[in-house]
Length: 120
Image (tube, rainbow, N blue to C red; front, side, top):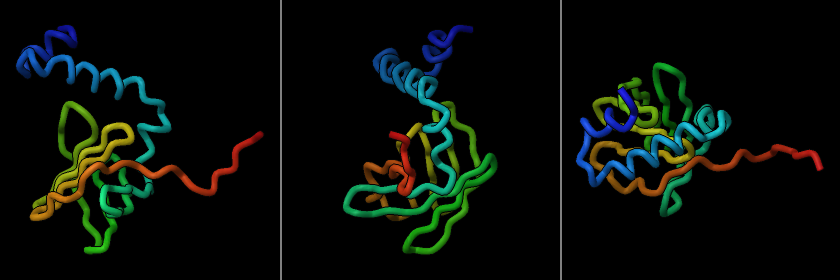
């Protein structure tokens, strides 16, 4: 089965171009961007932020509300973590975080690593 026919069975034709772009971007992302989630700061709109630690089985979010651990789920695009009080999707440098009762976590992305010295 080709990737085109796989997606054709899952979604309407109008969404096909968007899905194919997402798959291409995820596949083309450098390994450093795909693995960037380990111990990274995430910045969202309106100055909101949290620290994220992930592994193959779970994601831990540390924020002003405390600490939240989510279990790995299955999703065809990105890495998906879920729990009874929140959901998290990581797709390249983009992060979607939705805690129950608070949909104001918008435009979230990984912050660049600080303190790295580049050779000149």
